Image (cartoon, rainbow, N blue to C red; front, side, top):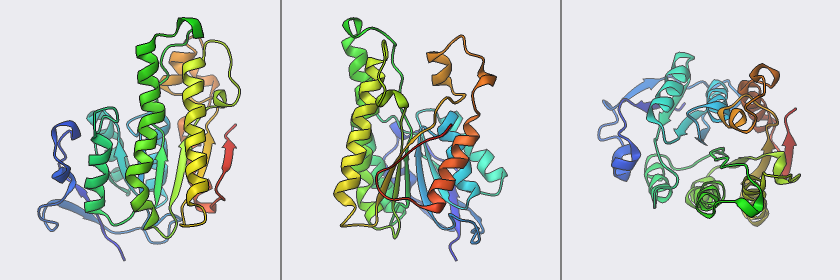
Amino acid sequence: MTTWRRLTSLPCWRNASPDALLPANPDTDFETRPAMSKLPLSDQIALVTGASRGIGAATAKALAAAGAHVILTARTTGGLEQVEEAIHAAGGTATIAPVDLLDGDSVARLGTALSGRWDRLDILVLNAATLGSLSAVNAIDQKELGRVLALNVSAQVALIQAFDPMLRKSARGRVIGITSHIARHPRAYWGSYAASKAAFETFLACYGDEVENISNIRTAIIDPGATRTAMRARAYPGEDPASVKDPTLVGDRIVTVLAADFATGHVEKID
């Protein structure tokens, strides 16, 4: 039976070497907790991006409640620590890895560090994204467009590349991409975000097709639908937050999809 440990201290990734995630002394640097062997995702190792709040945080908590050990990544250390504390308070296990996905080779360094700590990755949830500004195509700011595409597209490809070797070592590697209906149903003023999500979906679908017959990796795209998040509030400032669903419903559904399993190419909208 596996016993998971968590780091008791982790410096901000931007100021840390890849060795920051590696234990100098496994017997003293980590807090031990018994594995939860009867839960649907017991002994699974999961990585969730954008895990400090919203759908990412809710998904991380749901994965941990289902027995997975969850690696939490986001830019904000404080938010990650709050999610980690909530997971541990509920009896789960987690490791935080603060990282700016747009900071040079940070994704590759994260991959190197985690592969030195664990021999595989069972679940990768690609959730981190940015909305950008809603504007007409003929008024899109090119610098902002570059930032949207860098995070929503290029960083996602970098994450797939960095963790593909670990996913291949899993007996059941699963990649979940969080998208938006706007990727398939574009409308006025959403050009930057819609284009970035359409490109993200395409890359993930291509990757899934490429590895389906040569590995145990399977990919799926989940559209959470209208959900109470900070991004939603920015996009719809006059909307009553109580009129849309809580992120916990999305996290729970993602765990249900993972536990039941799926074929590559699975696309689902959560209503």
